[in-house]
Length: 358
Image (cartoon, rainbow, N blue to C red):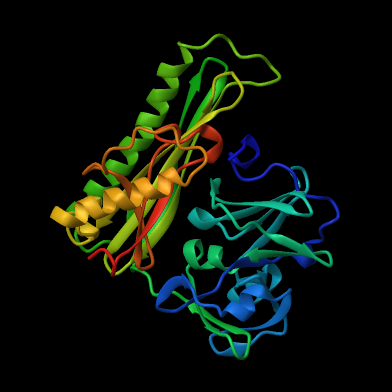
């Protein structure tokens, strides 16, 4: 994960037209976030995909490329009513608003970085075909509240809105001047819970994390030499909502800092809450980490790490307070930068299907 992926958007190619914006992502059905595509589809070249929203056929078509479905952003804008904007100054396209705003930064025709609230959503990125920008459907499914049913024989994707918790999530901001740099931390504020005490406790935890980001900026600034004008200090915090359904809420807050050197540093902190009582869940609350299952998990993670070219060694066991977040039907365990892998290899992540690890 390079510096260009750090926050949302740097440069969008000037040749991409607003009317050509689009989405892309892996094929998933309404009950699973796993791809459900045939071997033949995986091997095929780009082909057209019929799109539906709430059972109604859309005039715009999607695209199937090596098992991944891509949906035009203009189709999302028109069918779902999601705002689509273009920032001419920063040459950045955004879809949505609030806590699920997606940015598409086109660094080259073959390299389009996607972020949600500045959170790098990983591979695969977008594609530009015949001047039209497409973004993976997987991003819609994981971050934009959309679920879909894939029909391989008809090459069609029928999409609907996910059923989510009846709560409101808004973004609040803490700011503080640190030397000549403004440290900024955006954090979620949750409302609409039946249990007001639970709501208070959840918001207390989330705000405390933002306060810690600001405090960390103040503490870090004194350990570094003054930063020049060309590469000024930078302290930014934000968040992304991974899961908001079935009485559970899973959020990752992250902060980026640059205080000189070859690159900045990003830290992630995830929170998964029970909305019924405000309890913050641990990984062992959502998967079985007892007896033989714990050793099975350790072996699974170690084997995956050893296959990573950037593995630095040192892994012994998954801790009880391991970092993780929820997504549809899975828990995603992850480690911080430098914990076990070199910086260039990003955050090591391990998707754990909840049915397989119950």
